[in-house]
Length: 556
Image (cartoon, rainbow, N blue to C red; front, side, top):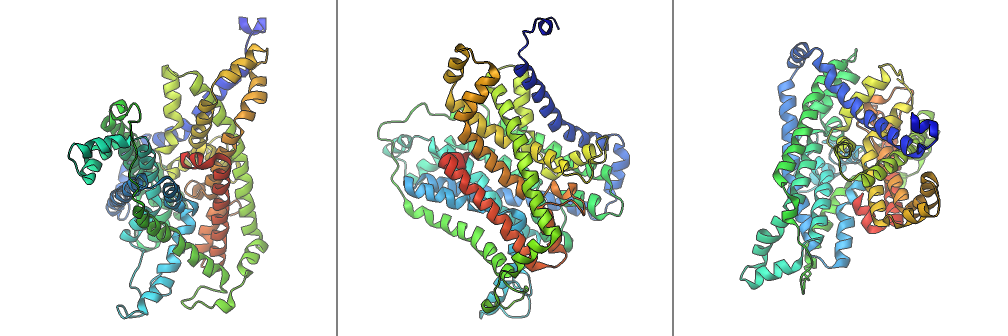
């Protein structure tokens, strides 16, 4: 208070610290609320959950889904990442784009496209298969609305996460180590297993933990493919307790979410224990003659994966969107844009699309401000317990399923003291909390590359802290800020898990309206909305790559 009276307080610094405390509270509050809600009546809720129909099968399905996707995604993601490391630079850039191409397709849109392909009776792929001599009948032979089908579709969308970790780590491996191993008598394959895979072990472990976390928290694919066919996981059961029951059971839903939160903390701890000291996997510098012999034929399996992951589902969506109705017969002469005109003329659908754009834009602005404040603090306070605490807290949304965080936000801000039920601000708060880590990571990377010399020069010339930020730092950081903003806009505009709990009949976003349209059986409208979502994602990712370059796109 004495400093305040003297007028020597740096209010920019004080407000920045206050903002960090507020951000930490917004992240911690939903998590604590979800954990506290069942603890208040633990044994009572334990009995309620134990009495739920097929709860044992639901738990088994959850871990089978997580384990299946872990094995498949880790295997293929590691192989594609290693294959990219064996390609020439030009082919490696192409392989990176192809392997991450499935991220262009929002899962809620992609899974509906797979249904249009493999619906037992009128799915386009099943119709083609039954036309061959190998299959007959009026149904099948493939039905993805099963646990194995859910695992396969989930794997398609999780492979890029493992790939990005592994391929990034491989770029830092000195090729001279492989050459030295081969000179010492090892075969090329032997050098890969004995040298390369051991060096990138931390990246493989990181990828495995991420996939396991995402697998345990998978919601969209199990909900669309399994809920109507008796295949539930913990996340879909949480949704059922809040959205399907005549009276929402918030305490039961929170109790179901508790194991997912604890599993997230446990997996992060196991990851750190398994990796240990990361420095023992690092190589100080590049050796002499460190060049790999390109093996460009390894791009072939990557091309096959990219085609399977994107083309069939998007093609099916486009066919249904252009057709007057979904049937087993494709009539090209009946194609039209009527579905796109119809969804725009439908005030409910049009409002949901505009809501997505507007709420995502507000969320991006808030998240950019928060990301900049946190990134600046983390660079200026590189040591200390509080800075470590901030670092861990900011990354918590990456370890907890979105539907769980959405539940916490619903309990606090919708039905709690804030009373925001039915307000668009619920979505903004959820988007801010969920996607802040992405903005912090990208802006922090830009600040590191920029250095501190320009800021120091401005301060020496008499500029205050706020003036330095506005006139020096932000203009130099505009590319990182633009890339972070576009990335978060793409993610926010397609977010479904948390949005499904925060929506109301009169206040929806694009992803939730797409789900309702599918459930109502208006398939041409569903396909048209899905194409709009894919277009938004594709435009956003393309702009990120143009603004930030290939490195920024991969960092995203």
